[in-house]
Length: 402
Image 1 (cartoon, rainbow, N blue to C red):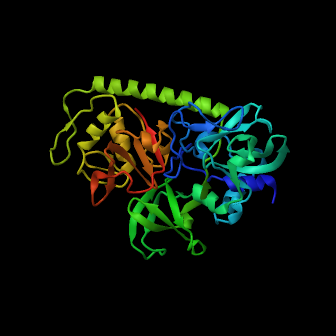
Image 2: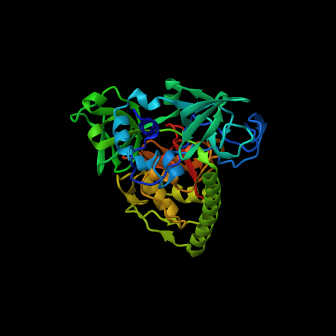
Image 3: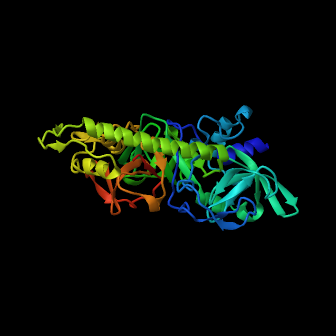
């Protein structure tokens, strides 16, 4: 197997229906200003000030945008994705996982005096290309995302398949218009949930993959989907290049400014008249304010209204991403009608920084953080728009608009 093939296998990401994603998993390290980091000159731990969003787990597509993950000119990606889809252990070969307080610098050369070209965050993955013995210790030449450079071997764990599986996520991306999630791995089993084209579901068991089924988790619980209608792939957190970090920080600042301006315009144009009422003739207040708490206050009015798959009406029926989209639309913010796409909107924050109005993304589901550990969301047909514990399922990403 060629090096490029191994690289493509290690980092293959199936084509998603949306461009870009940033995932914040519950296993990702928390990021706080002034946390211990690796010195830019010595490679030792030291207190470092940095963006509080720098440690957000960065999914491969968002970092690379339109770039291919591994050597696009080699045109191996498509075949590699097909190989990964059957879940071979070989996709974890030559993988090194960073085990640091926050991040380790990736150097242009195998020396601590060399300029850094990127950062490899805790639990992020890289493919090891070669080992270099230097006067100050052992260095590894690695490639991770769009970054190639050198890290000290003491800051990563190599060839640990269990750790690699633990820090990565297996996704089943929907490739059909409407995917049925069933109670058992058979077409005769009851349907427990529906998932739209392009959405991602976390794979929790591949025991039945040979018979054409994988077990996934969704808002309705765990169920099975046919492999005929999904593409299975692995996502690792990867390095962030120096240039990508600068662009991300600029994007975050621009997103904050644009969101605040949109919210102010929406608030200024809103009248005191009620929003359209549902069939019950219940009245709703127009949106006001320009922060996350205002978003929650507006969305909370619709608690009790129905869940409708594919819907976007806050009064007559909406699904989870339709609810988030429609609530934010009232504040002048345009969002996609997709829980997977919502993982790339705004900018990422850590679990510790979560505040009311933040968008919380799960496997096949999305909602709005209401504060006090509560999630405001269009949950199921049985409950409609309601509140749940924000930790009712593993969180994949937290995104902030305001």
